[in-house]
Image (cartoon, rainbow, N blue to C red):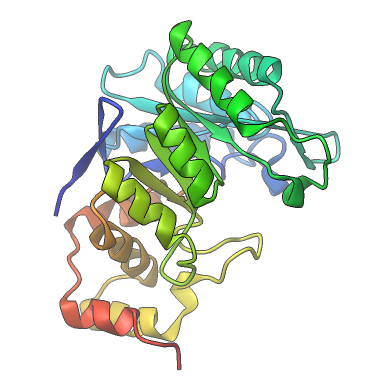
Length: 289
């Protein structure tokens, strides 16, 4: 099984780290234990992880500020990927921020907060009308034009997209996107057409909610009886089963599981060395009882 994948010229370890869990409840405010958060980030690098996913709207600014404090000056092979396209209201609501000038300003704010000269990859987090209720969504091609402008101006090296359907994913890849970040896991495989598109085009596919969502958007993978049975049989955790299945399912999948626990970080990283048998895979993919 491949342990790395090329993401727009960056060779990244297929097990990365997502920084969404660093801020307080609702992804707002500072962490409960800042020293523990900094220590966890340093452990990320010690474990050989070179792909960190973050966003200026995590906190806001909290995750980016912690990453800079813990890890700068950054190792030359560290690929920090951030997201733009949204902001947070005072009450914590997710608010679209998708006009070209907003995308450009927010991307520059990410670069500044992280203390970078240039951001390796910036994901455009698309927010469709059905998600926001807004009637004046900025056309997707205009948003892609802004991302290409950021590349041309040297603010970012590459860009990707997040939360897009197959048609928009194809449009973004044609425009130069090097990764697609959508919700996907063993129990929520509705995005298989986008994953297949990315596989065919040699583009990285980065599933968020790889073990289900704490916000109730998708079921918890580690609570499924099939997952628990395979875990017990192999002497590993149910979470490791869910992550290992993703790695084996397609070689262009890059994982970014998030955690605030060093123990869980180490368990997540250990899936590099786990191989599920075909019997295990067949059981995991069998209909739920």
